[in-house]
Image (cartoon, rainbow, N blue to C red; front, side, top):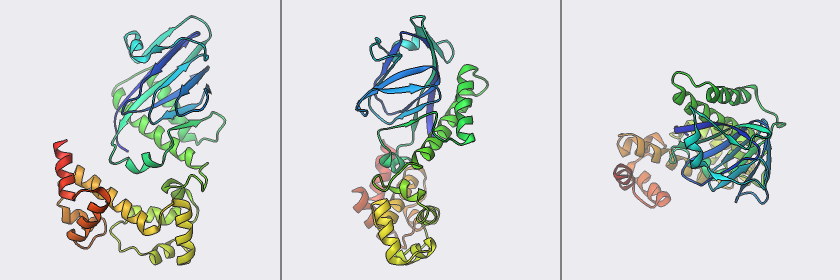
Length: 294
């Protein structure tokens, strides 16, 4: 995912309080440290109550947060001028609430497959089962915003990346077949291992038979289950992932197209170019040129 830039503010607010944030290219999150709040966004049909320990991640759209639905809200940009270090304090002097409000930018090309299958937002509640490491990341974010230290910006970047990964792990535990996608596939007891093998060894000459053998299933049972859970046939999925990986390499490295083609499983540059153009609607060379000019 490659978090490129992250910013986290610690808000120490007292009722009544409220603010709203407009959408941008960043992924934004709210980590409730103490107290409670009401969150509203277009992706939710009704206001969402947050309490201490809750985590809310938003992948797009505006949102507002307040101590209660009737409270007035100011734009978050107005709060920047009240920041002392990484701490913002405001409100009416009533019941206190502490939260971490953050945003971070990730590499949109590398993260494309994950962003396509995630919902508009993720809400993880305090009473949901969490790993010790997940809880530790949340605590470290709280400490880093309260007492910034040497290389604090770099620390925040890495913590945001870890927070995002742990949140996705927790989200996948509740995925159903109806939601589908490759996240559901990689979390599936029968398909997960072979999908990880595909990702790690794109250069291999994969067939449906060899995939089924890696999964310990018959060809027909494997193909049917893969289609049901992931929503694509095994070979369609393999092609999609090969082209995604190739597009990252074309954009991020100086390797020649032929070498990249072999690295993702194509015997010739011409065969790779044909598939790449069908999927991406442009040739590998044109894609690299556009990325360089951009």
